Length: 178
Length: 217
Image (cartoon, rainbow over all chains, first blue to last red; front, side, top):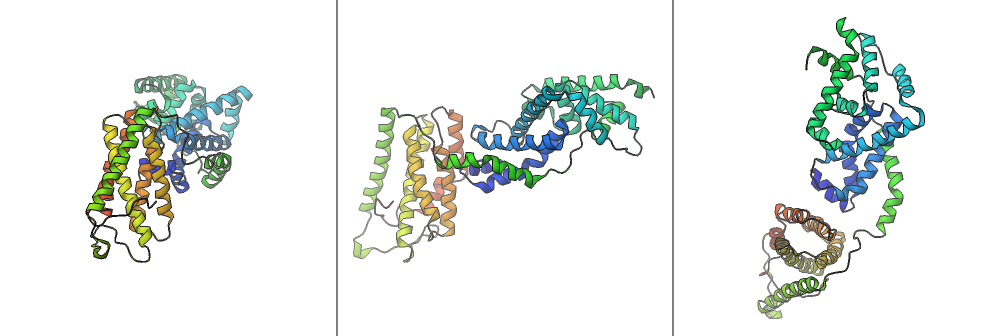
């Protein structure tokens, strides 16, 4: 069953089609959101919210982009809102520092300082840079897909990736010299 | 991208590395959160309220549908032999009524013919950009008959498959709104063509096999 047939069946009120849509996209959306928010509870809430909004708004989906890209856009918007709320509540730095102590296992052959510093520097990137860097360099989305999901031109996505990499290189210069 | 970028990209893959998602748990929560909304919706599904019709277009649609049905009725009467001479000759792709389910199958044939006439008219109206709310309300009525036939215990699987495909088309039309763009409406007719719906309806209810009583459903 392709996306269009799936959507028609959901619109006709077929609950098994809703489950099929969920099964087809949940893993990818969870990865995407988790990369960005970094915490299981927050990621789960965001993914749940994404599907709830998607089922409610499926009537508005016009097929201008792939269904997966449309869902990705909702997921990103939900994740951004969740992070904004968290930032307002407690400040991001403290949260990330705590997460890093848990999520930075030693990997053989990799300088642990560089890895830790890199993760810290990714955290410090401006939100737009960080999002594009994670979507492109970590999750492998194309600039066209990123543009659609973030509501920007693909050229903007390319520019932000360029600046994100430059920022990371600059901040990690001491390791480069080593 | 230089060597450093490669190295950074490689290391970045460990950033917030996602665990396996708790699929079932999240699905249960989604269902629980949506339950009140779904219940509310079942009160009004499958149709949304429509604005009032422009009278001239409504009258044109009503006249069009009535004309198609009337022509079909008279053609049927003219080609009908006397009751004692009726000899049903089933066609390979057509529905052949069995004795046990004859009333249901006759009803199904009448429904398919009505749907075919309606969809033909609908497609023509899309070409001229004259779809309106009467088309929507007629789709709803056909949808109700269609649902009845899909759920009927005597409907054979082949017929049910055709009715389910027809249902998708009718649902699409029944949910049209006056604010929908022409390209959205055209998606429905494209779907009609891609599914070969009119051809399948004609094959399943050939006009020259036998006349049908009107007003079955």
